Amino acid sequence: MKSFFRKPVFLTATLAAMWVALLLLVLLQFRWTNELSEAHQQRLEATLTASSESFRADFQADLSAVCRSVQNISPEDPPTLPLSPIPFRLYYLDLQSDALTLWNRNSDRFEPQPWPDAWSQLRPELNQAADDLAAASSRRWFNRPWLASSSLPLFFRATSSTDSLDAEPSANRLQGFLLIELDLPALASRYFQPRNDRSFAASGLESRTLVSFLETPVFDSQPSATRSPGKVQGLDLLTPSPSSPRFNLRPLAEESPWHLRVEHRAGSLDTAVAALRFRNLATGLGVSSVLLAGIVFLILTLRRAEQLSKLQTSFVAGFSHELRTPVTAVCMMAENMRDGLTTNPDDVKRYGQLMLDQGHRLRSRIEDILAFAAGRNLTLDLKPLPLAEVIASVLAEEATLLKGFEIETSIAATLPPVLADLPSLKSVLINLISNSAKYARSGAYIGIQASESAPGFVSLTISDHGPGIAPADLPFVLEPFFRGKDARTSGVPGSGLGLHLVQSRVEAMGGTLRLESKPGQGTAITLQLRSKPA
Image 1: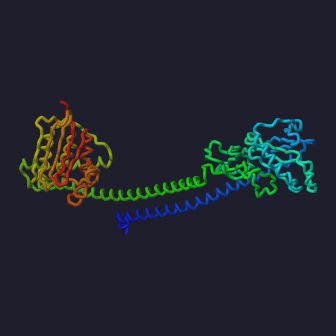
Image 2: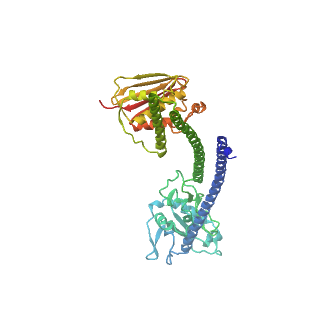
Image 3: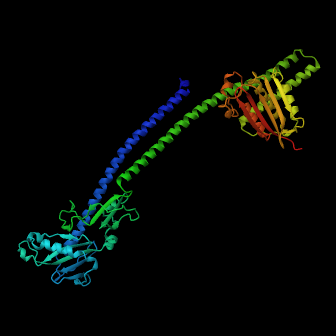
Protein backbone atom coordinates (compact mmCIF):
# COMPACT_ATOMS: atom_id res chain seq x y z
CA MET A 1 0.00 0.00 0.00
CA LYS A 2 2.86 2.38 0.82
CA SER A 3 4.48 1.73 -2.55
CA PHE A 4 1.28 2.85 -4.28
CA PHE A 5 1.47 6.31 -2.70
CA ARG A 6 5.04 6.65 -3.94
CA LYS A 7 4.23 5.95 -7.55
CA PRO A 8 4.56 8.86 -10.01
CA VAL A 9 0.97 8.32 -11.16
CA PHE A 10 -0.33 8.91 -7.66
CA LEU A 11 1.83 12.00 -7.20
CA THR A 12 0.69 13.40 -10.55
CA ALA A 13 -2.95 12.72 -9.69
CA THR A 14 -2.47 14.41 -6.32
CA LEU A 15 -0.96 17.45 -7.99
CA ALA A 16 -3.83 17.61 -10.50
CA ALA A 17 -6.40 17.35 -7.70
CA MET A 18 -4.69 20.13 -5.76
CA TRP A 19 -4.58 22.29 -8.89
CA VAL A 20 -8.31 21.76 -9.51
CA ALA A 21 -9.00 22.61 -5.86
CA LEU A 22 -6.98 25.79 -6.20
CA LEU A 23 -8.88 26.77 -9.35
CA LEU A 24 -12.17 26.23 -7.52
CA LEU A 25 -10.93 28.35 -4.63
CA VAL A 26 -9.89 31.09 -7.04
CA LEU A 27 -13.30 31.04 -8.72
CA LEU A 28 -15.07 31.13 -5.37
CA GLN A 29 -12.82 33.93 -4.24
CA PHE A 30 -13.61 35.90 -7.40
CA ARG A 31 -17.31 35.45 -6.74
CA TRP A 32 -17.04 36.37 -3.08
CA THR A 33 -14.82 39.33 -3.92
CA ASN A 34 -17.48 40.65 -6.30
CA GLU A 35 -20.14 40.28 -3.63
CA LEU A 36 -17.97 42.00 -1.05
CA SER A 37 -17.12 44.76 -3.52
CA GLU A 38 -20.79 45.37 -4.26
CA ALA A 39 -21.56 45.49 -0.55
CA HIS A 40 -18.61 47.84 -0.02
CA GLN A 41 -19.86 50.10 -2.81
CA GLN A 42 -23.35 50.21 -1.29
CA ARG A 43 -21.86 51.03 2.11
CA LEU A 44 -19.76 53.81 0.62
CA GLU A 45 -22.76 55.23 -1.22
CA ALA A 46 -24.84 55.16 1.95
CA THR A 47 -22.02 56.73 3.97
CA LEU A 48 -21.42 59.50 1.47
CA THR A 49 -25.14 60.18 1.11
CA ALA A 50 -25.61 60.34 4.88
CA SER A 51 -22.54 62.55 5.24
CA SER A 52 -23.84 64.94 2.58
CA GLU A 53 -27.31 65.12 4.11
CA SER A 54 -25.90 65.70 7.58
CA PHE A 55 -23.58 68.44 6.38
CA ARG A 56 -26.38 70.16 4.45
CA ALA A 57 -28.56 70.09 7.55
CA ASP A 58 -25.77 71.66 9.62
CA PHE A 59 -25.09 74.29 6.97
CA GLN A 60 -28.77 75.21 6.69
CA ALA A 61 -29.15 75.34 10.48
CA ASP A 62 -26.26 77.80 10.77
CA LEU A 63 -27.57 79.94 7.90
CA SER A 64 -31.05 79.96 9.44
CA ALA A 65 -29.60 81.06 12.77
CA VAL A 66 -27.81 83.97 11.09
CA CYS A 67 -30.88 85.01 9.13
CA ARG A 68 -33.18 84.87 12.17
CA SER A 69 -30.71 86.87 14.26
CA VAL A 70 -30.69 89.82 11.88
CA GLN A 71 -34.10 89.79 10.18
CA ASN A 72 -35.70 91.98 12.91
CA ILE A 73 -32.91 94.57 12.94
CA SER A 74 -34.21 98.07 12.21
CA PRO A 75 -31.98 100.76 10.72
CA GLU A 76 -33.64 103.33 12.98
CA ASP A 77 -33.02 101.42 16.21
CA PRO A 78 -30.43 98.66 15.55
CA PRO A 79 -29.44 96.34 18.41
CA THR A 80 -25.99 94.77 18.88
CA LEU A 81 -25.26 92.27 16.13
CA PRO A 82 -24.97 88.75 17.62
CA LEU A 83 -21.93 86.53 17.11
CA SER A 84 -22.27 83.93 14.36
CA PRO A 85 -20.34 80.81 13.36
CA ILE A 86 -20.54 82.04 9.74
CA PRO A 87 -18.49 85.14 8.86
CA PHE A 88 -20.68 87.69 7.05
CA ARG A 89 -21.29 91.39 6.40
CA LEU A 90 -24.75 92.96 6.92
CA TYR A 91 -26.05 95.68 4.58
CA TYR A 92 -29.27 97.65 4.41
CA LEU A 93 -30.60 99.12 1.18
CA ASP A 94 -33.15 101.92 1.51
CA LEU A 95 -35.28 101.89 -1.64
CA GLN A 96 -36.64 105.41 -1.05
CA SER A 97 -33.24 107.08 -1.00
CA ASP A 98 -31.34 104.28 -2.83
CA ALA A 99 -28.78 104.49 -0.03
CA LEU A 100 -26.66 101.47 0.86
CA THR A 101 -25.36 101.20 4.43
CA LEU A 102 -22.99 98.67 6.05
CA TRP A 103 -23.25 97.49 9.62
CA ASN A 104 -20.24 98.57 11.69
CA ARG A 105 -19.65 96.11 14.52
CA ASN A 106 -17.58 98.62 16.46
CA SER A 107 -20.24 101.36 16.50
CA ASP A 108 -23.27 99.00 16.31
CA ARG A 109 -24.92 101.01 13.57
CA PHE A 110 -25.31 101.20 9.82
CA GLU A 111 -22.90 103.49 8.04
CA PRO A 112 -23.05 104.73 4.41
CA GLN A 113 -21.36 102.45 1.92
CA PRO A 114 -20.83 103.03 -1.83
CA TRP A 115 -22.45 100.56 -4.18
CA PRO A 116 -19.80 97.82 -4.97
CA ASP A 117 -18.92 97.36 -8.63
CA ALA A 118 -19.33 93.58 -8.29
CA TRP A 119 -23.02 94.09 -7.40
CA SER A 120 -24.03 95.16 -10.89
CA GLN A 121 -26.14 92.01 -11.37
CA LEU A 122 -27.81 92.36 -7.96
CA ARG A 123 -30.16 95.23 -8.86
CA PRO A 124 -32.23 93.17 -11.35
CA GLU A 125 -32.62 90.49 -8.71
CA LEU A 126 -33.80 93.04 -6.11
CA ASN A 127 -36.23 94.58 -8.60
CA GLN A 128 -37.61 91.11 -9.39
CA ALA A 129 -38.13 90.42 -5.67
CA ALA A 130 -39.82 93.83 -5.21
CA ASP A 131 -42.17 93.15 -8.10
CA ASP A 132 -43.11 89.74 -6.68
CA LEU A 133 -43.97 91.31 -3.29
CA ALA A 134 -45.87 94.29 -4.68
CA ALA A 135 -49.20 92.50 -4.63
CA ALA A 136 -48.39 89.95 -1.92
CA SER A 137 -50.87 89.10 0.78
CA SER A 138 -50.23 89.81 4.43
CA ARG A 139 -49.49 86.12 5.11
CA ARG A 140 -47.00 86.00 2.26
CA TRP A 141 -45.37 89.20 3.55
CA PHE A 142 -45.12 87.76 7.01
CA ASN A 143 -43.66 84.43 5.82
CA ARG A 144 -41.44 85.90 3.10
CA PRO A 145 -38.18 83.89 2.87
CA TRP A 146 -34.62 84.98 2.58
CA LEU A 147 -33.58 84.79 -1.07
CA ALA A 148 -30.20 83.62 -2.32
CA SER A 149 -28.62 85.68 -5.08
CA SER A 150 -27.73 83.81 -8.25
CA SER A 151 -24.61 85.90 -8.89
CA LEU A 152 -23.18 86.69 -5.44
CA PRO A 153 -22.64 84.86 -2.15
CA LEU A 154 -25.42 87.01 -0.76
CA PHE A 155 -28.87 86.54 0.84
CA PHE A 156 -31.51 89.30 1.08
CA ARG A 157 -34.94 89.82 2.57
CA ALA A 158 -37.43 92.66 2.11
CA THR A 159 -38.29 94.97 5.05
CA SER A 160 -41.55 96.87 5.61
CA SER A 161 -43.14 99.24 8.06
CA THR A 162 -45.02 96.39 9.74
CA ASP A 163 -44.74 92.61 9.93
CA SER A 164 -48.18 91.51 11.16
CA LEU A 165 -50.55 88.86 9.87
CA ASP A 166 -53.48 91.13 10.78
CA ALA A 167 -52.18 94.13 8.88
CA GLU A 168 -53.80 95.19 5.64
CA PRO A 169 -51.86 94.41 2.49
CA SER A 170 -51.48 98.15 1.86
CA ALA A 171 -49.76 98.52 5.26
CA ASN A 172 -46.97 96.11 4.19
CA ARG A 173 -45.21 98.76 2.18
CA LEU A 174 -41.74 97.78 0.93
CA GLN A 175 -39.10 99.96 2.51
CA GLY A 176 -35.82 98.23 1.64
CA PHE A 177 -33.75 95.09 1.86
CA LEU A 178 -31.49 93.52 4.47
CA LEU A 179 -28.53 91.91 2.74
CA ILE A 180 -26.19 89.26 4.19
CA GLU A 181 -22.95 88.87 2.23
CA LEU A 182 -20.86 85.82 3.07
CA ASP A 183 -17.11 86.29 3.11
CA LEU A 184 -15.99 83.31 1.00
CA PRO A 185 -12.26 83.34 1.99
CA ALA A 186 -13.18 83.66 5.65
CA LEU A 187 -15.90 81.08 5.18
CA ALA A 188 -13.37 78.60 3.84
CA SER A 189 -10.75 79.26 6.53
CA ARG A 190 -13.05 79.52 9.57
CA TYR A 191 -16.26 77.66 8.98
CA PHE A 192 -15.42 74.80 6.61
CA GLN A 193 -12.30 73.59 8.38
CA PRO A 194 -12.91 69.92 9.37
CA ARG A 195 -13.90 69.59 12.99
CA ASN A 196 -14.90 66.63 15.07
CA ASP A 197 -18.54 67.74 15.08
CA ARG A 198 -18.72 68.09 11.29
CA SER A 199 -20.34 65.24 9.38
CA PHE A 200 -17.78 65.12 6.59
CA ALA A 201 -14.86 64.74 9.02
CA ALA A 202 -16.03 61.25 9.98
CA SER A 203 -15.54 60.00 6.43
CA GLY A 204 -12.51 62.12 5.64
CA LEU A 205 -10.27 59.08 5.33
CA GLU A 206 -12.28 57.83 2.39
CA SER A 207 -14.09 60.86 0.99
CA ARG A 208 -13.37 64.24 -0.54
CA THR A 209 -15.70 67.13 0.33
CA LEU A 210 -16.05 70.02 -2.13
CA VAL A 211 -18.31 73.03 -1.46
CA SER A 212 -18.65 75.38 -4.42
CA PHE A 213 -20.39 78.62 -5.26
CA LEU A 214 -20.98 79.21 -8.95
CA GLU A 215 -18.44 76.50 -9.83
CA THR A 216 -15.81 78.23 -7.68
CA PRO A 217 -14.55 76.01 -4.83
CA VAL A 218 -15.23 77.51 -1.43
CA PHE A 219 -13.90 74.55 0.49
CA ASP A 220 -12.02 71.43 -0.64
CA SER A 221 -10.99 68.81 1.92
CA GLN A 222 -8.36 67.54 -0.53
CA PRO A 223 -7.16 70.54 -2.54
CA SER A 224 -4.25 68.58 -4.02
CA ALA A 225 -6.61 66.11 -5.71
CA THR A 226 -7.39 66.51 -9.39
CA ARG A 227 -10.74 68.17 -9.92
CA SER A 228 -13.19 66.75 -12.37
CA PRO A 229 -13.54 68.92 -15.49
CA GLY A 230 -16.74 70.78 -16.23
CA LYS A 231 -19.40 72.10 -13.97
CA VAL A 232 -19.45 70.86 -10.38
CA GLN A 233 -22.47 68.68 -9.77
CA GLY A 234 -23.72 67.52 -6.43
CA LEU A 235 -26.17 68.17 -3.66
CA ASP A 236 -27.98 71.52 -3.59
CA LEU A 237 -27.21 73.09 -0.22
CA LEU A 238 -30.29 75.35 -0.35
CA THR A 239 -32.82 72.58 -0.93
CA PRO A 240 -34.71 72.09 2.37
CA SER A 241 -33.28 69.18 4.30
CA PRO A 242 -35.67 66.67 5.91
CA SER A 243 -33.92 67.33 9.23
CA SER A 244 -34.38 71.13 8.88
CA PRO A 245 -38.09 71.58 7.98
CA ARG A 246 -38.19 75.26 9.06
CA PHE A 247 -35.45 76.38 6.69
CA ASN A 248 -36.71 79.72 5.37
CA LEU A 249 -34.16 80.41 2.65
CA ARG A 250 -34.73 79.90 -1.03
CA PRO A 251 -32.67 80.42 -4.18
CA LEU A 252 -33.92 83.26 -6.37
CA ALA A 253 -33.45 81.21 -9.52
CA GLU A 254 -34.47 77.65 -10.22
CA GLU A 255 -30.88 76.44 -9.99
CA SER A 256 -29.05 77.14 -6.77
CA PRO A 257 -25.49 78.46 -6.98
CA TRP A 258 -24.50 76.54 -3.82
CA HIS A 259 -23.46 72.93 -4.28
CA LEU A 260 -21.90 70.22 -2.18
CA ARG A 261 -20.11 67.26 -3.68
CA VAL A 262 -18.83 64.41 -1.56
CA GLU A 263 -16.97 61.72 -3.49
CA HIS A 264 -14.47 58.98 -2.80
CA ARG A 265 -10.89 60.16 -2.70
CA ALA A 266 -10.07 57.90 -5.69
CA GLY A 267 -12.74 59.63 -7.78
CA SER A 268 -15.89 57.73 -8.66
CA LEU A 269 -17.09 54.91 -6.47
CA ASP A 270 -16.85 52.55 -9.42
CA THR A 271 -13.14 53.35 -9.74
CA ALA A 272 -12.54 52.91 -6.01
CA VAL A 273 -14.44 49.61 -5.85
CA ALA A 274 -12.72 48.33 -9.00
CA ALA A 275 -9.33 49.11 -7.44
CA LEU A 276 -10.36 47.31 -4.25
CA ARG A 277 -11.57 44.31 -6.23
CA PHE A 278 -8.31 44.20 -8.18
CA ARG A 279 -6.22 44.33 -5.00
CA ASN A 280 -8.22 41.56 -3.37
CA LEU A 281 -8.03 39.35 -6.45
CA ALA A 282 -4.32 40.03 -6.92
CA THR A 283 -3.68 39.13 -3.29
CA GLY A 284 -5.75 35.96 -3.55
CA LEU A 285 -4.11 34.88 -6.78
CA GLY A 286 -0.69 35.60 -5.31
CA VAL A 287 -1.41 33.45 -2.27
CA SER A 288 -2.80 30.69 -4.50
CA SER A 289 0.25 30.85 -6.74
CA VAL A 290 2.60 30.61 -3.77
CA LEU A 291 0.59 27.68 -2.43
CA LEU A 292 0.66 25.95 -5.82
CA ALA A 293 4.39 26.53 -6.16
CA GLY A 294 4.89 25.06 -2.70
CA ILE A 295 2.89 21.98 -3.63
CA VAL A 296 4.83 21.51 -6.87
CA PHE A 297 8.13 22.01 -5.09
CA LEU A 298 7.16 19.53 -2.40
CA ILE A 299 6.17 16.87 -4.92
CA LEU A 300 9.30 17.43 -7.00
CA THR A 301 11.41 17.22 -3.85
CA LEU A 302 9.77 13.95 -2.88
CA ARG A 303 10.30 12.52 -6.34
CA ARG A 304 13.90 13.72 -6.33
CA ALA A 305 14.46 12.12 -2.95
CA GLU A 306 12.95 8.87 -4.22
CA GLN A 307 15.16 8.94 -7.32
CA LEU A 308 18.20 9.69 -5.18
CA SER A 309 17.37 6.77 -2.95
CA LYS A 310 17.15 4.47 -5.97
CA LEU A 311 20.42 5.82 -7.33
CA GLN A 312 22.14 5.29 -4.02
CA THR A 313 20.86 1.70 -3.91
CA SER A 314 22.09 1.14 -7.45
CA PHE A 315 25.41 2.75 -6.54
CA VAL A 316 25.93 0.41 -3.61
CA ALA A 317 25.24 -2.60 -5.83
CA GLY A 318 27.49 -1.37 -8.64
CA PHE A 319 30.31 -0.30 -6.37
CA SER A 320 30.14 -3.61 -4.56
CA HIS A 321 30.63 -5.30 -7.92
CA GLU A 322 33.65 -3.11 -8.70
CA LEU A 323 35.17 -3.99 -5.34
CA ARG A 324 34.37 -7.65 -5.71
CA THR A 325 36.26 -7.98 -9.02
CA PRO A 326 39.78 -7.09 -7.75
CA VAL A 327 39.17 -8.91 -4.46
CA THR A 328 38.19 -12.06 -6.37
CA ALA A 329 41.27 -11.83 -8.60
CA VAL A 330 43.60 -11.36 -5.61
CA CYS A 331 42.01 -14.29 -3.75
CA MET A 332 42.22 -16.57 -6.82
CA MET A 333 45.90 -15.84 -7.42
CA ALA A 334 46.68 -16.23 -3.71
CA GLU A 335 44.98 -19.67 -3.68
CA ASN A 336 46.97 -20.79 -6.73
CA MET A 337 50.19 -19.76 -5.02
CA ARG A 338 49.17 -21.46 -1.76
CA ASP A 339 48.24 -24.71 -3.47
CA GLY A 340 51.58 -24.80 -5.34
CA LEU A 341 50.00 -24.46 -8.76
CA THR A 342 52.44 -21.68 -9.54
CA THR A 343 56.07 -22.51 -8.77
CA ASN A 344 57.89 -20.90 -11.66
CA PRO A 345 59.72 -17.82 -10.38
CA ASP A 346 58.62 -15.80 -13.38
CA ASP A 347 54.97 -16.79 -12.85
CA VAL A 348 55.21 -15.99 -9.15
CA LYS A 349 56.66 -12.59 -9.98
CA ARG A 350 53.89 -11.99 -12.52
CA TYR A 351 51.24 -13.04 -9.97
CA GLY A 352 52.75 -10.71 -7.44
CA GLN A 353 52.65 -7.82 -9.89
CA LEU A 354 49.03 -8.57 -10.81
CA MET A 355 48.04 -8.74 -7.14
CA LEU A 356 49.81 -5.42 -6.53
CA ASP A 357 48.01 -3.81 -9.46
CA GLN A 358 44.63 -5.10 -8.27
CA GLY A 359 45.41 -3.85 -4.77
CA HIS A 360 46.21 -0.41 -6.14
CA ARG A 361 43.00 -0.51 -8.13
CA LEU A 362 41.03 -1.50 -5.05
CA ARG A 363 42.67 1.23 -3.00
CA SER A 364 41.94 3.79 -5.71
CA ARG A 365 38.25 2.85 -5.74
CA ILE A 366 38.04 3.09 -1.96
CA GLU A 367 39.75 6.48 -1.97
CA ASP A 368 37.35 7.66 -4.65
CA ILE A 369 34.27 6.76 -2.69
CA LEU A 370 35.70 8.15 0.53
CA ALA A 371 36.59 11.41 -1.18
CA PHE A 372 33.13 11.68 -2.70
CA ALA A 373 31.35 10.80 0.54
CA ALA A 374 33.42 13.32 2.52
CA GLY A 375 32.80 16.00 -0.08
CA ARG A 376 36.41 17.20 0.17
CA ASN A 377 38.85 18.31 -2.49
CA LEU A 378 41.41 15.78 -3.56
CA THR A 379 44.99 16.31 -2.38
CA LEU A 380 47.23 15.21 -5.23
CA ASP A 381 50.97 14.91 -5.72
CA LEU A 382 51.52 16.41 -9.16
CA LYS A 383 54.67 15.28 -10.97
CA PRO A 384 55.84 15.25 -14.59
CA LEU A 385 54.70 11.92 -16.02
CA PRO A 386 55.29 10.35 -19.46
CA LEU A 387 51.74 9.99 -20.76
CA ALA A 388 52.65 7.28 -23.30
CA GLU A 389 54.10 5.01 -20.60
CA VAL A 390 51.08 5.52 -18.30
CA ILE A 391 48.71 4.63 -21.15
CA ALA A 392 50.71 1.50 -21.99
CA SER A 393 50.66 0.45 -18.33
CA VAL A 394 46.87 0.85 -18.12
CA LEU A 395 46.31 -1.10 -21.34
CA ALA A 396 48.46 -3.93 -19.95
CA GLU A 397 46.47 -3.97 -16.69
CA GLU A 398 43.15 -4.05 -18.58
CA ALA A 399 44.32 -6.60 -21.16
CA THR A 400 41.79 -9.18 -20.03
CA LEU A 401 38.89 -6.73 -20.29
CA LEU A 402 40.11 -5.47 -23.68
CA LYS A 403 40.47 -8.90 -25.21
CA GLY A 404 38.90 -8.88 -28.68
CA PHE A 405 38.99 -5.07 -29.03
CA GLU A 406 40.81 -3.15 -31.71
CA ILE A 407 43.00 -0.68 -29.85
CA GLU A 408 44.26 2.19 -31.96
CA THR A 409 46.75 4.55 -30.32
CA SER A 410 48.13 7.75 -31.79
CA ILE A 411 50.54 9.45 -29.43
CA ALA A 412 52.84 12.21 -30.61
CA ALA A 413 56.51 11.32 -30.31
CA THR A 414 57.42 14.79 -29.06
CA LEU A 415 54.67 14.83 -26.44
CA PRO A 416 55.88 16.64 -23.30
CA PRO A 417 55.33 15.09 -19.86
CA VAL A 418 52.02 15.93 -18.18
CA LEU A 419 51.70 17.32 -14.66
CA ALA A 420 49.55 14.74 -12.91
CA ASP A 421 49.17 12.49 -9.91
CA LEU A 422 50.05 8.95 -11.04
CA PRO A 423 47.31 7.04 -9.13
CA SER A 424 44.70 9.60 -10.14
CA LEU A 425 45.77 9.65 -13.78
CA LYS A 426 45.73 5.84 -13.94
CA SER A 427 42.32 5.80 -12.25
CA VAL A 428 41.00 8.26 -14.86
CA LEU A 429 42.36 6.23 -17.76
CA ILE A 430 41.16 2.91 -16.35
CA ASN A 431 37.69 4.36 -15.81
CA LEU A 432 37.40 5.79 -19.32
CA ILE A 433 38.87 2.74 -21.08
CA SER A 434 36.79 0.28 -19.04
CA ASN A 435 33.64 2.34 -19.80
CA SER A 436 34.39 2.11 -23.51
CA ALA A 437 34.99 -1.61 -23.19
CA LYS A 438 31.79 -2.23 -21.26
CA TYR A 439 29.37 -0.06 -23.27
CA ALA A 440 31.00 -0.21 -26.75
CA ARG A 441 31.55 -3.96 -26.99
CA SER A 442 29.42 -4.14 -30.11
CA GLY A 443 31.83 -1.73 -31.88
CA ALA A 444 34.95 -3.49 -30.51
CA TYR A 445 37.02 -0.39 -31.11
CA ILE A 446 38.81 1.98 -28.75
CA GLY A 447 40.87 4.90 -30.02
CA ILE A 448 43.45 6.76 -27.95
CA GLN A 449 44.94 9.96 -29.38
CA ALA A 450 47.31 12.33 -27.55
CA SER A 451 48.89 15.51 -28.84
CA GLU A 452 50.01 18.94 -27.69
CA SER A 453 46.92 21.08 -28.20
CA ALA A 454 48.21 24.42 -26.96
CA PRO A 455 51.28 25.75 -25.18
CA GLY A 456 51.26 24.21 -21.73
CA PHE A 457 48.50 21.67 -22.43
CA VAL A 458 48.22 18.13 -23.75
CA SER A 459 45.02 16.84 -25.34
CA LEU A 460 44.06 13.21 -24.70
CA THR A 461 41.01 11.76 -26.45
CA ILE A 462 39.52 8.32 -25.78
CA SER A 463 36.83 7.34 -28.28
CA ASP A 464 34.78 4.30 -29.23
CA HIS A 465 32.32 3.12 -31.89
CA GLY A 466 29.64 2.11 -29.43
CA PRO A 467 25.93 3.02 -29.26
CA GLY A 468 26.65 6.52 -27.93
CA ILE A 469 24.64 8.51 -25.40
CA ALA A 470 21.11 9.77 -25.96
CA PRO A 471 20.90 13.58 -26.38
CA ALA A 472 18.44 13.78 -23.46
CA ASP A 473 20.96 12.09 -21.14
CA LEU A 474 24.07 13.91 -22.35
CA PRO A 475 23.74 16.99 -20.06
CA PHE A 476 23.47 14.76 -16.96
CA VAL A 477 26.05 12.00 -17.44
CA LEU A 478 28.67 13.82 -15.37
CA GLU A 479 26.35 14.14 -12.37
CA PRO A 480 26.87 11.65 -9.51
CA PHE A 481 24.79 8.45 -9.56
CA PHE A 482 23.25 9.29 -12.95
CA ARG A 483 22.86 6.46 -15.45
CA GLY A 484 21.06 6.97 -18.75
CA LYS A 485 18.09 4.92 -19.82
CA ASP A 486 20.17 2.88 -22.30
CA ALA A 487 22.78 2.13 -19.63
CA ARG A 488 20.11 0.93 -17.20
CA THR A 489 18.46 -1.34 -19.74
CA SER A 490 21.69 -2.77 -21.17
CA GLY A 491 22.36 -4.90 -18.08
CA VAL A 492 25.90 -3.54 -17.72
CA PRO A 493 26.69 -3.10 -14.04
CA GLY A 494 27.69 0.39 -12.91
CA SER A 495 27.26 2.96 -10.16
CA GLY A 496 26.83 6.15 -12.17
CA LEU A 497 29.76 7.66 -10.25
CA GLY A 498 32.69 6.91 -12.58
CA LEU A 499 32.50 9.91 -14.94
CA HIS A 500 31.79 12.27 -12.04
CA LEU A 501 34.96 11.06 -10.28
CA VAL A 502 36.91 11.32 -13.54
CA GLN A 503 35.87 14.95 -13.91
CA SER A 504 36.71 15.68 -10.27
CA ARG A 505 40.22 14.19 -10.60
CA VAL A 506 40.96 15.92 -13.92
CA GLU A 507 39.88 19.30 -12.52
CA ALA A 508 41.93 18.67 -9.36
CA MET A 509 44.98 18.24 -11.61
CA GLY A 510 44.21 21.57 -13.32
CA GLY A 511 42.66 20.12 -16.45
CA THR A 512 39.28 20.08 -18.14
CA LEU A 513 36.98 17.43 -19.61
CA ARG A 514 34.83 17.63 -22.75
CA LEU A 515 32.35 14.94 -23.76
CA GLU A 516 30.91 14.41 -27.25
CA SER A 517 28.54 11.65 -28.31
CA LYS A 518 26.25 10.80 -31.18
CA PRO A 519 23.72 7.96 -30.96
CA GLY A 520 24.86 4.99 -33.08
CA GLN A 521 28.28 6.53 -33.81
CA GLY A 522 30.06 6.37 -30.50
CA THR A 523 31.41 8.58 -27.74
CA ALA A 524 34.59 10.67 -27.45
CA ILE A 525 35.92 12.12 -24.19
CA THR A 526 38.71 14.66 -24.45
CA LEU A 527 40.94 15.61 -21.51
CA GLN A 528 43.02 18.77 -21.47
CA LEU A 529 45.94 18.10 -19.12
CA ARG A 530 48.64 20.52 -18.10
CA SER A 531 52.14 19.76 -19.38
CA LYS A 532 55.55 20.46 -17.93
CA PRO A 533 57.07 23.69 -19.32
CA ALA A 534 59.94 23.08 -21.71
